[in-house]
Image (cartoon, rainbow, N blue to C red; front, side, top):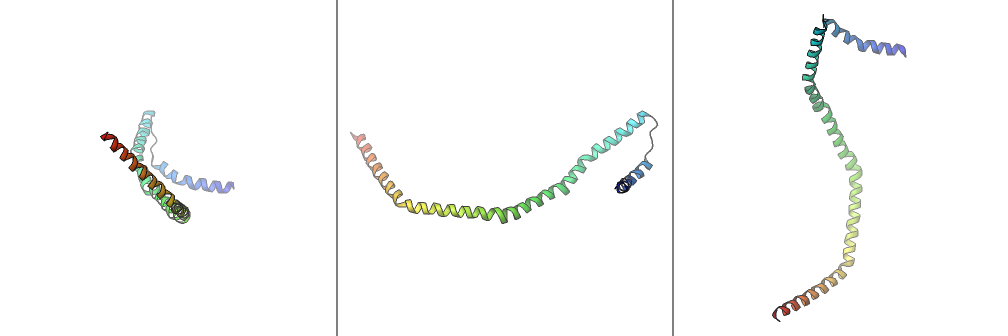
Length: 129
């Protein structure tokens, strides 16, 4: 186990050694501060573009794929048929209830129509009295 960890660590450190060969060691603390500031500025200038590139090329396509899968697989094959069955049952139930209550609704409507006519006639008569 230790052998594998050593091999992996060594393999990961080799590329870092090539960077160290090209860097000059600053002579004073002031030079070290300037080099650090330059590196920091360089990082801060490039960081927004790097993040934007990662966002545009990796994050957004991944989320789009997940949304497409969710719509296609989860909604299309699982949820949609179940919801459609429930809507069909509710529609059939509502249609039956309407058909059963239709005569009663028509009677109530006719009764209210007669009451309205009677009230309208009484109001009209009271205007002329």
